[in-house]
Image (cartoon, helix red, strand yellow):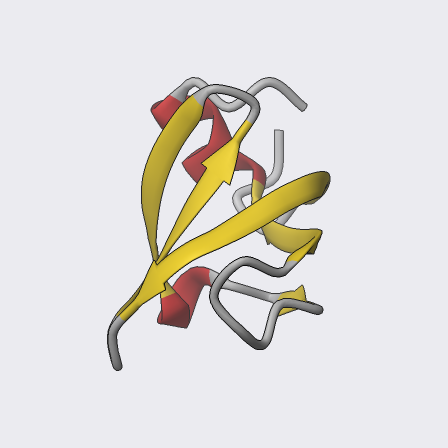
Length: 66
């Protein structure tokens, strides 16, 4: 597996954000994702539900099912 492989996760809810990270809800999990690791997303406001693209290694380490 390449360290540069990304995964797209759908139906992600933006719960909270700081200038360094986004707290999202994916299924029943709440996870802080550092902004520097987010490849792309379509979440702009708290409560938005959309898609986020993150490194596969990060998703695997956090137990995010992809």
